Length: 115
Length: 116
Image (cartoon, rainbow over all chains, first blue to last red; front, side, top):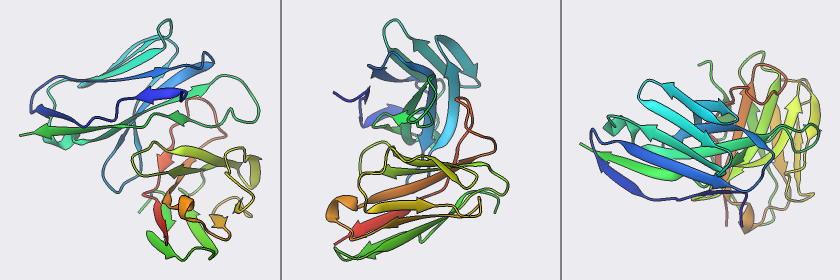
């Protein structure tokens, strides 16, 4: 079992829909949680960052972390065709030393928003 | 532009060839990372530099992989005796400070390596 599990989709929704993306993880040391967006043939771009449990909102995007369930979510409201991309969750641990610098990514969920 | 630049954009190698992939981070960025992204997978960590010091190389899959950043700016990832399983997109990322957990990483568009 991988440390971070993410359904690869693909997920197809009509324009204006609410999109829910999620990841589960197994490593209790993960404290920092991120969502990246990756367009085709481009590098990942940071969308949201959350420390520990709780919610964070930025425009149409809301990130939620439930550490007790080891479950994180990203919600996209009023989805647009320009949101069509692969969404990657990423996590890192709080300990120091070798291995602490890296992000552990999920597989990514491919989202298509249909006009 | 002011982003992370990687070259070449595409590289085709015959099995057994050596390859060198280049990363130009954002000017002044202290931290530099290499990640490997196989088709349909998320990026996987390879190595981390803080200025010219390689602080973590725990993700390099074998001794055929070698990375350097001799002057604390441009970095090169070298793969010797390439194998088919090395086929992937190699992503470089940089950030402005020594790595903290909440540092924003800026990724390049990657080098797509195909080993035939």
